[in-house]
Length: 408
Figure (cartoon, rainbow, N blue to C red):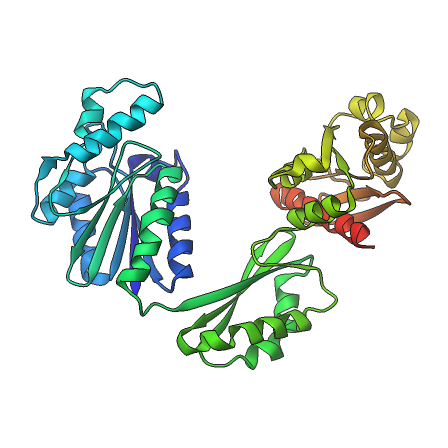
């Protein structure tokens, strides 16, 4: 089965919002064995919507449309869909009851625009939206399905998870695709590919490996289609053996989640003192639900006076060696560990760029300090010349160093 994703909205084409809907829909469809062949963004214009829908219906088995379902005049998607599928908009009392209940629970008044959302095509299956006022619509023509969803991401995700994915599995029971994920840290993509070359060449029919790189790590996805699904687990275990000696996490788990699990088992706590990473390490740690069990806090000591006044870094050491130095990063990590009274701490100080580098300390030079119940140490790294990549790589490496100590 193949699919085309259509996103409708001038705001996407103007660059005012990021199209995260296509990414989410594509990932969820891939999980059940649907191949996404195209992603198309178009404005809120009747002719373009009609022509794009017609094109997609000729090319794909499944069409996912997001956007253009709001209560304002510029939202014309449902009118075009009704026209395309030979229908008309009719009042649905059940939908009006849903809208009244939703607005009542939010202490919001019902207005004429809201009431207009109870008018929907008479030949579609209506998908109740518990998160917003725009209902989803499911049209069928032969074996093909066109599903129209609201453009608000959390509403779209709710309808995808509640209706679309479960019902596609029922409607198209022959779909069969499974995959396993691994995230390998601190190994360049080219080096990792060379290391896995023999293993990858030996994969059987229906099995494939994809490399999905990001700053600081590479995600590996093993995909199995059809009868090869029965061999997926064996290939997955073999891959883990080939990666012996490298740091990796399994599935969708991130290193910050592993750190949280390990600290929770120990009853341990952690804090961060960040300069060049600007709180990115703290953000990653606190992105894990329940991180308040072990994360006490952070000091973003971007300015030297904060390093000195809050973390207790010696001003003379900064003057003599600079803020980007082993001496300073060690004092930072000890200072935040003492300040927060934690078992572990991590600190960063570096030249993220694009400016500020010197021949001795070029852009990408990062010092990372780690404190444990038994010791304190620092490591120097030189990453890249791009600010965003330096911050991401430094944060990933900091978490890796912390996890290595927690596992000892």
